[in-house]
Amino acid sequence: MNTLNTSSVLTSAVRSIASTRHNYTAYDCYDSFFRNRPDLRSQLNGMCDALVYNEISRDEFDLRVERLMSRANLNKRSSQAEFMELRTQQLRFIHPDASNSWIKKTAQAELDKLILYQNRRNVRRNITTRRHSFSEYAE
Image 1 (cartoon, rainbow, N blue to C red):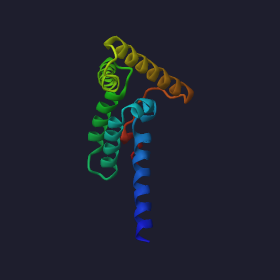
Image 2: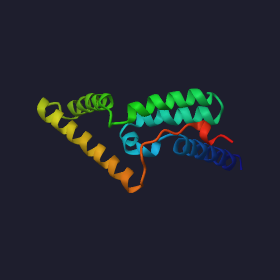
Image 3: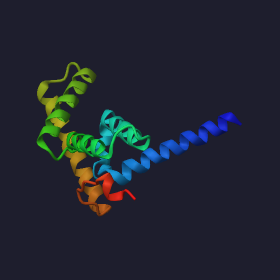
Image 4: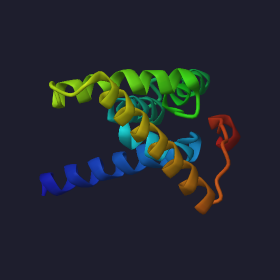
């Protein structure tokens, strides 16, 4: 009985965090980018968790989310550079004998494909880049 109760509480908490992530952030505009960077998605989930449990204020949440979305947005040059650096390191580890030009070309192709995929998803879902503020949804 206790296990069932704990499970339903956990499921409810996960739902509230997911609801906060989708309703109060621009996550849907960058979901492919976040799937590629699980560390950033984890940080976003942590911020949503903190907001749900009133550990941070709405203003602090908005500021943190804005910074994180800026890092996740691969349409920005600085985020592209960060992606290229991380991906080239990963490719060097996976393929230690590969040439630098092949690694760079492969990382660039992956970046281009990821940006194209996200843009197509946004067009299909009729999503435009937007920034949600939690205060817009507060009752």
